[in-house]
Image 1 (cartoon, rainbow, N blue to C red):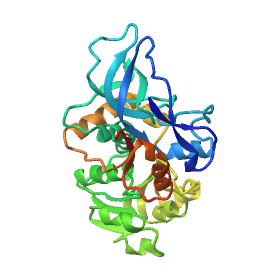
Image 2 (image 1 turned 60 degrees about the vertical axis):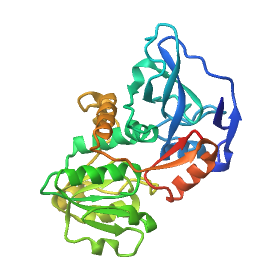
Image 3 (image 1 turned 135 degrees about the vertical axis):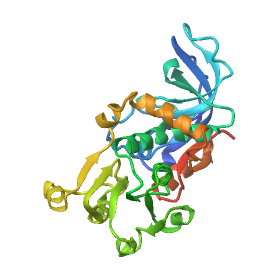
Length: 317
């Protein structure tokens, strides 16, 4: 099989297409003929050698933790009905997704309906479950004015849809030409100086996956009693805030990932299942940018350079 491997930490060019032996599923496992592999911003940090929520992998490694495709082999003790089924799986702590084959635990499998594309299924099992967790922990309502940062990213795109479906007024924020794809009550470009002055009035809820100066500006747009929900910091640092900010402004703020999301009824696996169901029902329409597997270098470069739209997915040619 062909796979993308990282032999040394560094720039995107360190991702190399290699030919490796076919995989053999073990007890309780299946092998998936991979059609789509998710690329996460965390993958780019690990590629650079920057440890974070996950430890650095041993090299060489095949990156990627989200895969979708067709089961083509099963290991001992695994249900023999799986071969031929369309599935998606999150591989968890163990990478291996940027490849033509992946091995996953039977318990991690979710069946994919025929009308759902493999890239959309990948978007649901990773980005979708996070988006659903965010809106479950801090749901938007019809009286809210919601500001979504990085709204042209895979996660922000789904948060905009969720807020609009809830009847909220939505301000979608992104940078540069990425704003052109957005559909919301108001669209702003936070790469422009003074972008906050364009926002019509204050906001009651901020979904912040950017952090840094942009996140701080968004915090200052909150009305008294507003909520700041943080789930990432693509700017390089979380939004800076203090207890004084919370008291003086009368706002609430919290981090939605990790233990809080795991404590949602059904846990993270339940969120993935529900997110996939929302895509299958047409309630969510993911925004996806696809790249052939052998263009993983370009996929990483575009994701880091904020040129890619939505969820970045590697696909088999």
